[in-house]
Image (cartoon, rainbow, N blue to C red; front, side):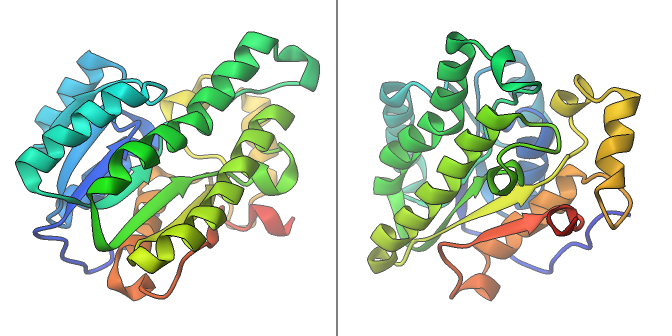
Length: 250
């Protein structure tokens, strides 16, 4: 059983969702689109991006979130097309697993460049477009609170802890512009990325840590995003919301 859809109407609103061709990002984009939002999908995979855009009826931005110049150029496209932006969802991310010494320097740099640098570049590129009353949602992880765990290792946890810290700081700086900034911390979510590393043993281990007895679906995260973007969360900023089935309680 997945989350019940919140009754929201985002007609006339414009959103950018990164990592939107598959997984959590695709689920978020689909939910925002279903709520009436005009959605721009950002992803580095052109074929998967085109397929998702055709499915959802969305605009596309084929770009790497590590490329600030490209993102700023696409921000101008959004300005020319829609005049502004209401929601920015930073979902693009990489996962590393295993003991600390199984991540080499190149993997570490790529992890930080995508998981944290991607948010840096998207905020720098898209916030100038954002209207008052807008919302930014960053996808963190329970690994931020546990220093790894679930599937992510210590370096993944460190990168997501930086996302939590950035969320708090951005909430403070953007609050006077009436832009709210929050984060979501999922545990293990059923996606192509996690299925690649979820052996039967790891799946059983993860499930044993979830009091609600199942792994998350992309729809669970998408509903939390909708809540944080909606007026129902109008006085919520700087928060990190666990959507983890109780993982952090165990």
